[in-house]
Image 1 (cartoon, rainbow, N blue to C red):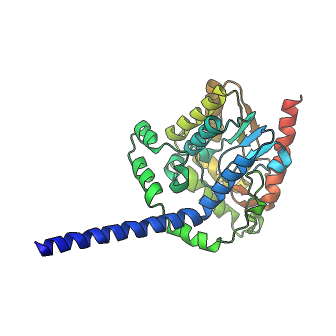
Image 2 (cartoon, rainbow, N blue to C red):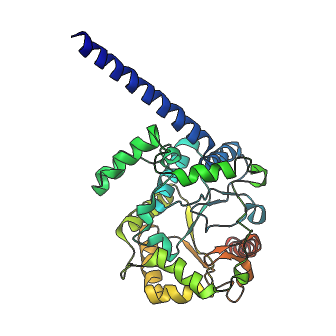
Image 3 (cartoon, one colour):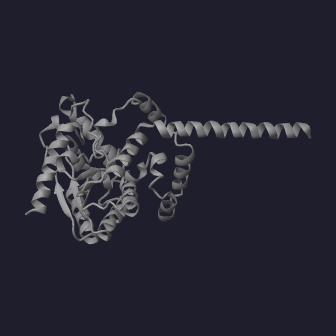
Length: 321
């Protein structure tokens, strides 16, 4: 009996130590992970934003529209963000902060609607602030969302070891460059200098668009509709933007997806749900200018500023015809 008591006591001590170590590791990861820090820095800046909010830019790292150029704007786009996360973030903003923009700016590129998009929810340690994982599980029938909530809450570091390495590399990251949520795009590589741009265009297009089919994937479409419904309910005008892509990316994308047909379907959804929306097509605005891209589907700072100027001009013409 004494040996049995000793066994259970040792097992309990081991369990408590394991839980304590896990809690420390999770807290350290949550506090130091580079993308958590970037996103929470955006959150702080948005909380402090008290100017007129004409444009609220939403989306991911493709959505590089500079608030310093557009004026009265906040760029709340974050790395790897998909429509599901954007919906819950916008819902939180409208319900909890009262900072409703006049225009919500959202990219409508092929990658946003691909079958892979909704399978790439990540950074759950941060996103559990916004995303209702149990609701997602019920709506989709995918009970892995419960696991994502659990790991995001209690052990977010598990399986994310490459981000631990990245966070060590960028532990001294300079966030002073981030203004009104906008983090200038990466600039340590120039797509024009790549020796085989065609291969890189193929790689990027295939990674996003392989297995697409002939219509938007159901998951992204569902939350795209929800975003538009939120905008309609709060009197916000959606501004749908096709962001610039390189010639190499587009050449291979068109082999994988009927872009014209996809664009028509997206516009039909926007018209059906919101009725009132603005479409800005910059997809080929930087054609023949590889020096304005970081890689096949991301602009660099110069490219971002050019697109931001085009955005400002088009919106000024719309607001003041």
